[in-house]
Amino acid sequence: MNYKSTILKFIRTLVTTSLLLATAGFLVYVYAPEQYYTPAFPFLLVFFLLATLIIFHYMYKAVEKRPMRFVNIFILTTMLKLLAYMAVMVTYALLNREDARAFVITFFIFYVIFTSVEVIALLRVNSEFMQKGDISNK
Image 1 (cartoon, rainbow, N blue to C red):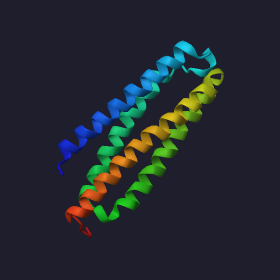
Image 2: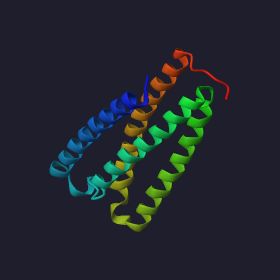
Image 3: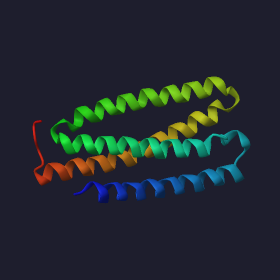
Image 4: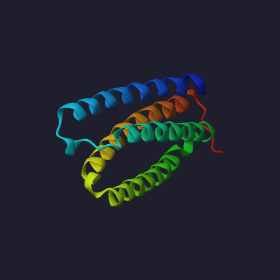
């Protein structure tokens, strides 16, 4: 397993996921009532794509250095990510009350989808490191 092939595969998965979400967002924009679509949709999509990529990179490097500490690093990263995401969501909702409902629902959907993609990829990476015997107690 090398970093370059893993990150390229992950980027392809993220781009595919983003394109599917963009298509779904376009359909909601065109066919659903206005109250179901947030104008922040494209920005949220880019935000989640970039945040997920950055977090995956950080987690990959952490697992590469210390595979036995994966769970600790994962829990800490997830907690910090959740707090940061909540701050973004609450701030936007307070500043844009008329769009708060659509924004929060979209944000939550993106959070679940992108976090699922990230966790699945990280579990694969961790299991590959563990199977390969790259276990160290550094």
